[in-house]
Image (cartoon, rainbow, N blue to C red; front, side):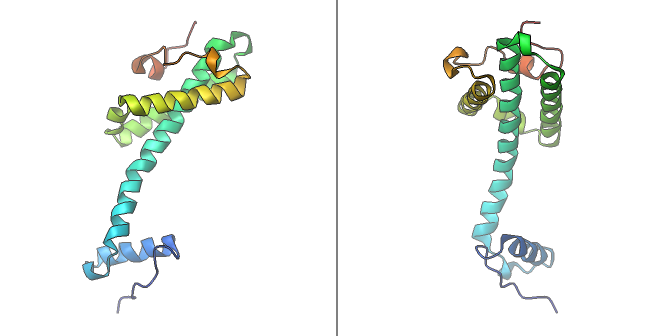
Length: 150
């Protein structure tokens, strides 16, 4: 006899999700919390976009630091850039539709603002010291052989 579903989404989302998965597998559609299931499915895509944005902001911030403070360049900065490029490539390989997200102007602008804020915090330079828009196109940014001013 299957267990009954009685965990509210708001009470314990992990237990709720396990119960919902079980109901789906058992094709017990009457027990599904469709509204919250739809929200959770949408959140999967948002989560992937957030990870991509975070990795791109870190990558762009490091490239800004690389360009702005050549005297402080380090293996650590180079490793971070290389790691972010690899992780971004893996994200796009696993979720090809993310490639289109990279070209959305509003999304790209927000990501650039995040990169500037991060670079400013990490360098001590004023945000105004950085370009208002990325000086590098997407291909250069993701190219493992590209390094600003090198």
